[in-house]
Image 1 (cartoon, rainbow over the protein chains, first blue to last red):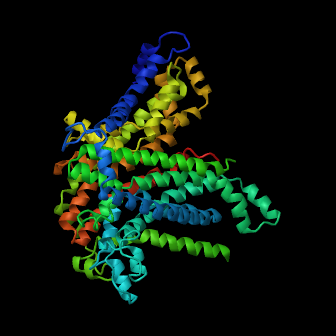
Image 2: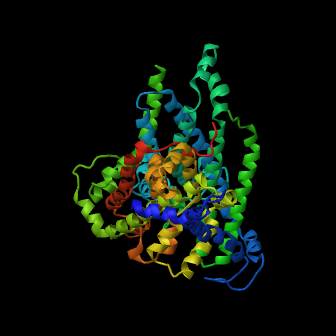
Image 3: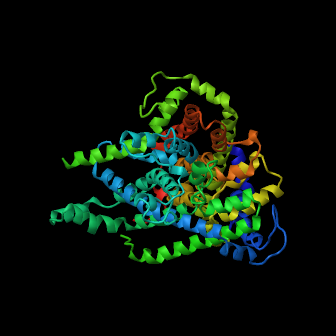
Length: 324
Length: 269
C-alpha cells in the first residue's frame, strides 16, 4: 500500500513549476467531476430542452413553450401552487419560532442539555416514511389515537388526513366557505413536518447561541438590562445570521417537500387535490401520466421560483442581518 | 425557580417529541385487537415478541434491508472517498483553473433536485440501469456540499504538516492517506453520517428507478407494506421500528465525533 502510493506520487510528479500539481489534481478530481457532470450539470441543461417537447413516455413533437402555457392555464397547476404556498407559510415561521424557543431554553440550562438536544434531534434523523406510518395510524379516523383522545374529552371525531374541507371552515363552524385556506388534511401534514423538522433547527440555533460571547450578555446585565432586553438587543441581533440561514434553508426545503406528502397520503387519494403540492404535481404528471415535457416544465418553473425567492429573501432580510 | 420552569417546559416538549416513537415501539409488541382498539393505553398487556418474526414473514424485509444497507453503505464510502480526494485537491494543490472549477462544483448545489430528477431518470434508462444497484448508488457518489466541507477541513490543517512530510520524501497521495485523512476525521464522520442518512432515508429516487420487488429499499418497501398490511397496525409499527433503529444506532455511535459547524455551514458568527 505504502509503496504503491509512493510510486503513484512519483508518477504524477511532473517537475518543478508553479502548476506542477496538475497531473495529481486531475487524478484526485476525476471521480467527483465525472459524477457531478453526468448527474448534475448535464441534466440541468437537458431539463430545459426536454420541457420544449410534448408526447407521452418520451419526447414527441417540439411544442416550444407549449408546456409552460399549458401549466399556466391548468387549474390543477394553480391548485398545487396554492397548496405549496399554504404549506410554506404554515410550516416555516412556526418551526422557526418553536425551534428558537426550545434552543433558547436549552441554552439557558447546563444540566442535561446534551440529553434533551439528542431527544429533540431524533425525529430529524429518522426515516420520514417510517415516522409517517406512525402518524397515519394516529390520524386514522376509526381506530386512531387522536380521535380516541378527542372522544375521551367529549369532542367530536374528525376526518384528519381524509378531510378536504378548509380548516378555517371547520373552526368557524361553516362561516368561512370550505374551499378557502388550507384543508384540514394539509394541516395534518404541516403538523407532522413541524414535528420532524424542528430538531434540525434547534441544533443549529443552539450552535449559533453557543457561539455568542457570554461576556456581552454579562456586561449588559451588569448595566441593569432585564432578560427580555438582553434577548431583544444582544442575543437576537447576534443570532440573526443563523436565523437568516435557517429561514432560507427552511423555505427551500418546504418548497421541495415530497416524502411526507407522499407517505402520509399515498393510497388515501390526495384529499380532492388539497394535499397535492408542486412536487407531487410533477411526480403525478411525469411518473403516473407520463407527461415528461410537462413535468420538466413545471420543475423548471419551480426551481426558478425557488431561486427568485431566495434572492428576494437575501435582499430583504440579508440587509438587516448583523454579522458580528 | 425559573430554572425549574425551563426544565418543565423542556420535558413537556421532549415528551411530545418522543411520544410517537414510544407508541410505535410499544405497539410493535401488542396483539392486533389491542393495537387497534386498545384506546390510549401505552404498554401492551402481554409483550408479543413473535411480532418481529411475523413482520419479516409478512413481507421480504430481509431483502429490503440488504438492498438498503448495500446502497447506503456504498454511497457513504464513495462520498467519503470522493470528497477527501476533491476536497484535498481544491484546498492544497495548485493547478490552472482551480478557482473556476471549484465555482462550477458549487453551482451544482443551487440546482433543486426536482429539476434534474426527470432528465436523470431518462439518463438512467439510456444507460440501461433501471432496476439495478448502479442506478441507486452511482448518481449519489459525489456531491458539492461534501466536497466544500472537506476543503474547509483541509484548509484548517496547517501547511507545516505537509511541508514536514515533504522533506521526508512524502508525496501528496501518501500524505493524504497517511496524515491528511486522519487529521480531518471528525469531518469524515460527519460527512459519512449524513451521506448514510440521506441515502438510507431517500424515497423519491428509489421509487422511480426501481419497480422490481427484489430491488426495493426499505423506504419503498414500507410504503408497499402499508398498502398490503396497513390494517395490521402492530406489524406496521414493528416494521417502522426496525427501519428506524439502524439510523438511531448509527447516530449514537457517530455523535461524539460530529462536527456541528457543517450543519450550519455558511453561517458567519
